[in-house]
Amino acid sequence: MDQPKPDWLKIKFNGEKSREYVEEILRKLFLNTVCEEANCPNIRECFNRKTATFMILGRYCTRNCTFCNVQKKIPLPLDPEEPGHIAEAVKKMNLKYVVITSVTRDDLIDGGAEHFANVIKELKNIGTGIAIEVLIPDFQGNFNALSKVVEAKPDVINHNVETVPRLYPTVRPMAIYKRSLEVLANVKLMNKDILTKSGIMLGFGEKEKEIIEVFIDLRNAGCDFLTIGQYLSPSKHHHPIIEYIHPDIFEKYKRLAIKAGFKDVASAPLVRSSYHAEQMLEGFLQNDKKD
Image (cartoon, rainbow, N blue to C red):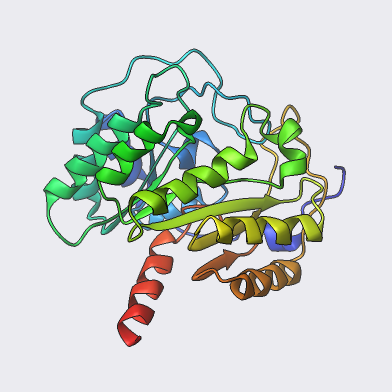
């Protein structure tokens, strides 16, 4: 779209004092972050807070989603030292809430699920007081692969539906909406105590009725938390931005999602899956204690 970026999407941020510290740790330990690979608009703020979302299973994705900036190439073999390196980075950065995501690895029999589990185990070996959220791919619907992640017992399992089902052929052509819902439902089937989370982006041309239907579908799958953010096209080669959604509309969707039954909802133009992710869990745990 030719419409200029609205003021509410223009990030005003001062200060870079901790960014170099985080970048140096990542370089020394050969770690990737979705912050960098996906060109996240919040990277400066997050790195300056000495936090990052680690991206495992390499830098190259086997899917062809048109919204994503992660590179689509033939993946390299898994790094067996990566789980230990992530644990080391978490200690150096003194993180109390860790978010782990990945590229999609359809070339692997289990989609990288065992590698996810190994990362979780390494983080648990650090000691108590660290909460773990994993943002996982769909593992091509492989129930046994998903069970490896669930059995490692992270605090939160996130799997994004990304958009409304009508737009999957152009936005997520290799994904299946129903399969993504089944991933979330199956987590609860395996362990009802693990909190589940999903996310959707706005600005692809979706309609309000379709968005509300996604809310209902996610709740029927037992999804606890939801994030809603504005889609920002990484380049002219990616899916175009059809519409910039006003912050008031994001507030409206938050109210509707809470009404649908989510335990917590983050909804604003610059919200991303892992942005201030710790606040959702902290808020839930505080409310749970009150109850």
